[in-house]
Image (cartoon, rainbow, N blue to C red; front, side):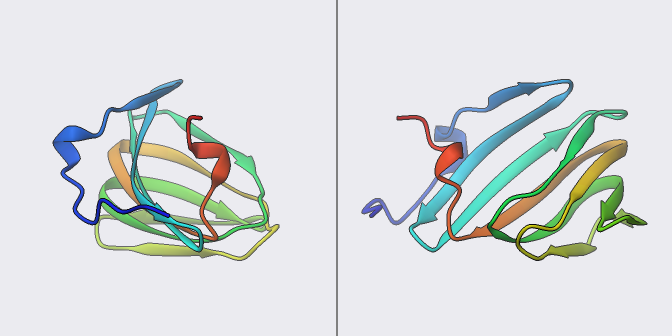
Length: 112
């Protein structure tokens, strides 16, 4: 359980995921996680699925989001919902940032 209740983004390091994608885990508890993800134009969030529920907010930029074989162009202020175990991915059409939330938290995102 996290006991540092206030998170200053400037104190959280970027993790380079390669291919023009990087992320910061901004906070988590066992049942919830918030992650900031930066994408360079043309970068791809490879289609994948996981057991977590996910809701993502487009903080800036433009993305082609595919969920369960349905594609939609989303821009700043839009959001998308991914149920557990549903295939989803993203193509960044303009430099952009997503705020991803997961329930439960993604243990695979935490460095041990």
